[in-house]
Length: 186
Image (cartoon, rainbow, N blue to C red):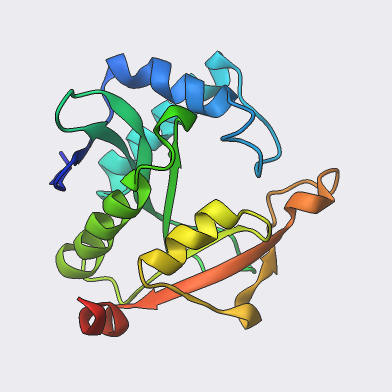
């Protein structure tokens, strides 16, 4: 069971009552602007089941992010072990996020991501955490910069899971943060 707290948020395992929010995120054209496909409710449910299984298996994954004051789920933020060879070595630790649009602009992603970096480096003992996004996804790259990550232009890559039918979404920029750099910033 994962349970992390920040001043305004709780990051926790998913519960069944979170499904509507998960479906909302995966079907919202603004949230999914930089992803090849939106998801139907059934596809979102399957994805949520895989996320829950990943958390149970690895102790990391994309956790439900909830407002502490109201217990309302607002999105997800988490760490995952990637499998994007040859772009990134297998089991590279990635930090990622998505929030329902009505919660954008409040600093929630930055707050949750900082807590997850601490969890990843202090509790899990990771040496490095990366993040990546479509080149034009300025909102996500701004968060990466705010949490202390540094762009690695030599590591930019064409995402192997983005179909060729979506060439504008293939190129991804890579950001990195080492445990050493994180400790020096903290």
